[in-house]
Length: 456
Image (spheres, rainbow, N blue to C red):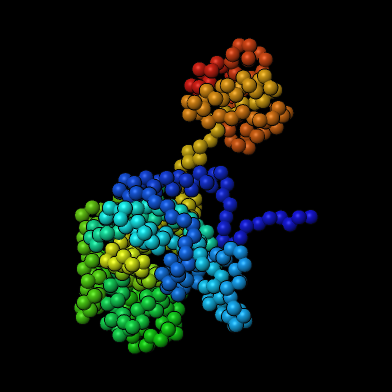
């Protein structure tokens, strides 16, 4: 017996209902992107390895899916390298392309490649799948969609304010209450590292700090020690593990902590500007909070950092994130082009809406009427009517086979189709239809005009 087929771990098939629900989220996000003035682009599903590698830090690089070269890919590997079994060196010889890890680095490549065709500041949105060789778990997949919006060519903090409003606008349209938009600033983190004497270990410090909600205070301290950060430095950073109060109170605490750090105070001032601006244009549904442990372990963030938490009654990771990257295009030769962007986690937003029962009942377009097939002549009569209904935007189908009535009615029930339309010799002669309400079981004879009125 042939083995039952399956799909790779971390990937999924989607049923018609699931696709309809996903499209509902995508359409909502897309409408808000456009409302805020963003333009759509698309980039290839895979890039040259050199485009992606080294842009996400050591952890990110390990999660990039590599694509084997076509043909005899081992031909370029000499015997000594092959027997050394040094995978990183061998990979460079046998793989020149990789699946994209996110949409931000490909966007930076796009900006540099098309810089002479772009009007700056350039506001783009992109909704496409990405791939990560991560360990699959709830809310974390190896193939998933990102919904990104970015602005490049402006250092203005009004862009940061705009993105907070954009997050709020999308979650308001989705009727998702209780969402928290967490913000921080990499300059604040640099300042903290400076005042505790760990500036030379900023990346190790921020990567460990970013894991506070996952591994707890003891876990973070242990990782910092393993990375070589002094115990005295860790002791100085201890107040951050329980940093409470309102945003204003937290900012005041940071001003005290970072008073001797110029870069740290720059970060505090930027946070203050964003918070003051949002206070003038209050959010409709989401709330804003300052999380000083928020680091987002990607190397390219230089200013504001965002992370969006789902409502507290849903146990799932972040449903969005992003930040400011002052010179991401510099890695491709275009210097001093500042950018800032955010991303929505489509799959996790789906899970949240599903758990909270927030999908509208009308999210999946349903077939209104199934025309029963009694034979060739009757089917043609029905098909002409189905065509007229479709021309009026009414979803209708003709059952393709002249099967037993019980089978056709059972199909209508399983598909939750509202009406079954029957037309035999008698109805054809009178140019009418017998229409059965599949929920109540009642049926009525009517002409085409009456049928159209019923289904509309």
